[in-house]
Amino acid sequence: MKLYGYYRSSTSYRLRIALELKGLTFENVPVNLLKTEQKDEAFTARNPFGSVPLLEDDGRDRAQSMALLEWLEDAYPDAPLLPSDVEERYTVRELTYAIATELHAPLNLPVLKFLKSEYDKTQDEIDAWYRHWLARTLEPVETRLAQLGTGDFLMSAPGLFEVVLLPQVYNARRFAYDFSASPRIEAIEAACLALPAFQRAHPDNQNDNPQGGNP
Image (tube, rainbow, N blue to C red; front, side, top):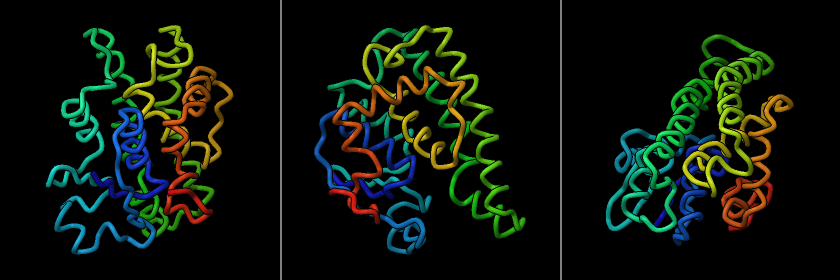
């Protein structure tokens, strides 16, 4: 199994966490987004979306992170990312898809580049854009977590929600988002980062991290 991704890509990060939680062995193959390697002809021949992650397994290339996460759950059911109870599964999906659908698109790298190149926005203005959209979704997520009375994780163990939440929190911290009103998100983040699977998946520990990550 090979995972083509970028160390700081939130969608690649999602897949790394999921693969680690499921105990699956994979090779991390770097694709440098800053050099637009994902748009190279050889790569788009395999993934017409020209995006990461791309997962190669059993002779097939698969793209799109949320579809990949659902596929992993079906193809490798051990160490499930979703609970068995139908209502709990709904709760996990409600919060997971709030982040995946409401935040990823407006905060993706091509959008940030477009703001700078086409609208001549400064980095401060782009950072403000980023934090605005984060707040629009993370504030109600925090409210829902409070309503549910969560502790270290949304359910009894980390699963699909944490797989999607942690990369977004990582990027939010890069843009100096204020988490002071998000104690439950921070509690989940801390509990996850204490686990070896999340540590191995972290951007700091990837072989394409220019600061010296580990393979």
